[in-house]
Amino acid sequence: MVAEKIEDIKKLKLIANSIRQDVIKMLYEAKSGHSAGSLGLADIFTVLYFNAMTHDSQNPEWKKRDRLILSNGHVCPVLYSALAHSGYFPQEELTTLRKLGSRLQGHPHKGTLPGVENSSGPLGQGLSQAVGMAIVAKTEHQMNRIYCIVSDGEQNEGQIWEAALLASKYKLGNLIVIMDLNNIQIDGTTHEVLPLEPLADKYKAFGWNVIEVDGHYIPAIIDAIEEAKKIPHKPTIILAKTVPGKGIQFMEYMVEWHGKPPAKEQMEESLRMLEHKKQMIEAETDG
Amino acid sequence: MIEMHLQKDLFGTLEKKPTRDGFGIGLLEMGKINSNLWVLTADVSESTRTHLFAKEFPQRFVQVGVSEQNMAGVGAGIAASGKVVVISAYGVFSPGRNWDQIRVSICYNDVPVIIHGSHTGLTVGPDGASHQALEDIAITRVLPNMVVICPSDFNQAKKATMELIKREKPAYIRSAREKTPVFTSENTPFEIGKANIYREGTDAYIIACGVPVYESLKAANELEKNGISVGVVDCHTIKPIDRKTIIDCASKTKLLISVEDHQINGGLGSAISEVLTDERLGVKLRRHGIYDIFCESGEPYELLKKYGLDCEGIKKVILEELKK
Image 1 (tube, each protein chain N blue to C red):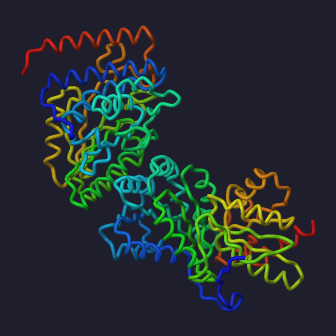
Image 2 (image 1 turned 180 degrees about the vertical axis):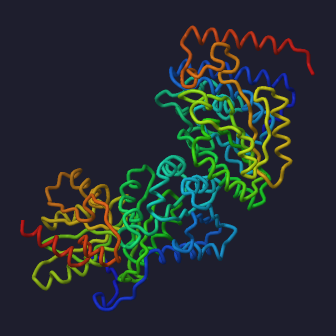
Image 3 (image 1 turned 90 degrees about the vertical axis):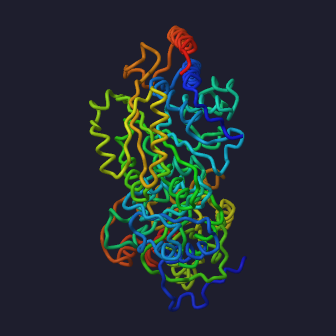
């Protein structure tokens, strides 16, 4: 059955909150992995899997599905949680992340876990694959869309720009890329390591449609994707400003949380914060 | 012995055609019977012979420009959409430049992408060392899920291309630019992973791949006149290597010579050496090829001569080893 499109913002916020709780539990159990990016992308993944994308967890190979290509594979805890919430596999399996015998590999592996569209890890490779899928879909007049998540640090890779040129050549209106613009990478801020700005101008110069959005404000993410869907002859990149570690105050904006899991007290503190946030969301008046 | 149907006047005047042409024609034929076949190139369509396919099937042809890394990824994406894909460029660039993309986007994803590396080996000639792909077999055969094939003439290149496309799994096929003798026929058998024994011997066996196979046949033919009996095996598939044939050859003689238009480290010779080690066979193996150096510009046959990969050079190596 095709996934229900959830329009209720409050429901979506609760899903994002639940995904963040999963991410904390998974990374704590795994004792290694990437906290900041996984938490920062929770709202975007919620919109993709529960509002924007047409997909069917009971039929992962359905030909008409929208596809999500995750290029920066290290944030896979957020992907795994979104997939489990969507019903691709049991949620109990989430805490097997990175463990021997688990289907939840440290970086995603296509073929091991239902719903994973591409193997990734080495940066810069996902966008090319998304472009390949979009070329086939466009050539064969398929109505589905190809979504691709890239990171800002990943823009250092030359392959990204090779793929950006080709997407423009083929006028891939069916390709929607979302960049996790969180300003951090392993060795420091993106500005310190290798300045990227002006990113919007760069993509515009490459022939792309560029939309800038707050990557935590769910109605804006929904609107940005809907707007992108209306552009028929250009690939779109949504530059989503996010806060690394979003939702866990002591992780937010901290570079050192890029590739670190929470320790026991930090995990407990994080879950308390998220539980408190959940109650606040529940108390919000509808609309 | 299985009948190999080699050309009748094997050491007379043979027609010469490059293996890249065999690839291009095989690709075109498969394009006609398989509407799921897509082809990509990185700005070298005519010289790698994908232009033949491009002209007939422009809808299924993607020109990515000079971007081999992107080509490997785009190819993987097209393959993940239910297609079988051939990506084609010069061997030095693909798999030379895009190895990580081949490893993760193609092999780890296990999607049907066939990598065609053209202009490989010494016979690319005047372009010089930067363009002589002499390490491509080494870097591809270490990858899980990968098959590696180095055809020895036009006919074999055509058959290998067609078989790899039918197989629909990751693979690497190398071809050469220079015209070389077409010494096999349309009826010569070709099976992935099954080496062809062209002649038997009692003193030594040459196990070769690519352009030097015919030179090896000539060398064996001439040595026979001196009373030296040398067998010749065309080991076109480097991975999976034909273990049985290698073990058989090792049981029949005391000397094996691997001959390849590739570095001696990591290529066919190394693959044979691994079989001998695994099987604890005490037979002597001489690995002949390029001896861990960068070569130079020159005409293709001048280079084969200088680096000992022509008939004379191969004869010399055999005689050297038999004297030891």
